[in-house]
Image (cartoon, rainbow, N blue to C red):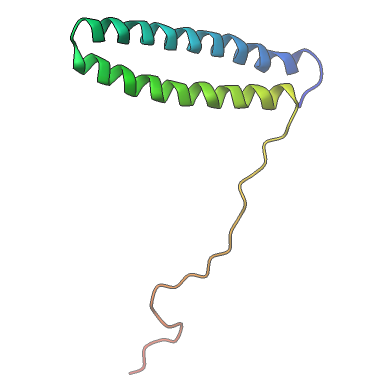
Length: 95
């Protein structure tokens, strides 16, 4: 991670973004309650799906902020060696 001011720029951006995103979720919850009281089931279903997806995004952003604050390196995914078996033999067909 870069040293100095450039280390704090992504951290500040993530804090601002997570604050904005959490407030958007609260607004969506408010509108979901208003839609439920107003008898609009389609809007409630849409907002429930949106809030679930936004909650995942909030969780992911929080995880990224924790990684930035603790200066953790993101680990690459493990590479797996799979034996390819497509049902064919390695030998060429005999004539």
